[in-house]
Length: 85
Image (cartoon, rainbow, N blue to C red):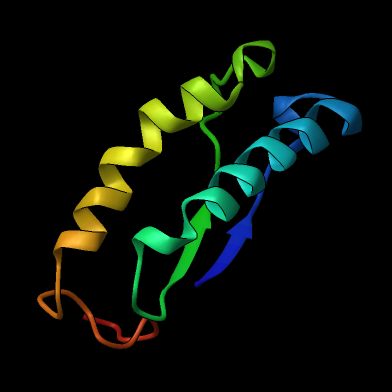
């Protein structure tokens, strides 16, 4: 699994953006075993995100259902992340 994170300046200053990145990276590090296949994931936080509320509980609440869905899919989705369809 490869992870791409993009946190724009609209989220806050560098310290705040780095904290958001650290929390997201740690979540995906802890849960990378849920996805057995090679996959690229790109995360772009919402503009209306309140960086003060970003913690592991919020990230788990938002992303665990997505990871569970990816784990259930066994080949039904795209096989190549660069596929245009």
